[in-house]
Image 1: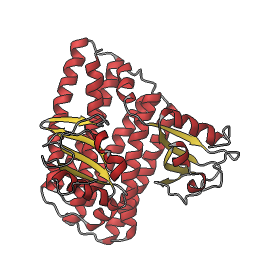
Image 2: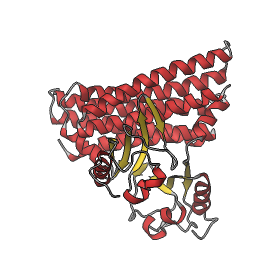
Image 3: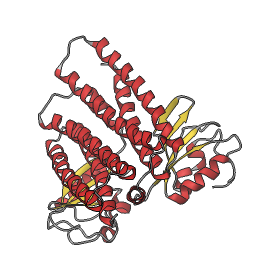
Image 4: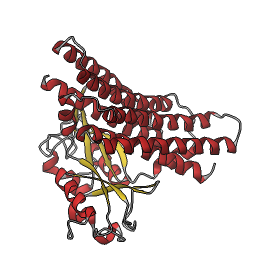
Length: 189
Length: 189
């Protein structure tokens, strides 16, 4: 079975977990923009799922028990993604949230933020390693959206481009810093 | 609405995420012991859910839109937990796993391990801060099971007791080290 299936399966898992993090974050900040991102990710996940099944059944038309295990893993990611989608839709629909929810979610010592990198940002056209973002600011870039494509778990040699949307986690303070750095307001890190 | 509901909601979310991590880990290592832990956690989750609903409906018998948002969040945790339970059951049933699954899951740079602290371990009756586990070994203790109770996100002043089961994440090497330290084989960290 091809390398493709491995990669697609991996991306499904990553996508679903990112969706869940973002969905909770959308609830916490009552942020419709983040919630909409979750729905976009869901569309992407459905594409990958279709792609994966096409690969699976191109390999062999016979259903084997081992193939079932792959399908079960796909379904797991799908279930997690659906759960994320549900709460994202709650935010988009503007449903009134009980204050206890915000309290329950606030206990996390990590915050999550989506920032768009402007041309004037010191991050533009530099690698994550160049700017030493993590060691200098405590900000962890867990994913990058570039147009319709996603880069998961970016590495030190990943070059950030203007227009990239970075999904960052860190403390509340470092997330605020991330916003300023990406927007170009803060020129030093 | 009481503090209890906040705490129960928080624990539900933590539990469901831990279950998912453990379930993937159970698949990766084809480890039935970890998979069984996932099922135990599911029972705990159901208890918390029941407790939470009892608190919710003790407050007011009238269903409000804000109350619905709490229920939706509970359902989210439940969906994630169910997804985890499904793959854990796949492991327990000894279903043959397609090798591509292991490949897809191996990309994570983090490994997860459950270790039981023996009396002779240097961890016994010391706090996480005392032993500086994280800075000395790179091992991150994300949860502790003590009898039937769970401690999530343990802090520096959390004291480890003999018999505690630690859920550790770290590199494959540091996870192996964690096993030796907890068993008492390794007396230095």
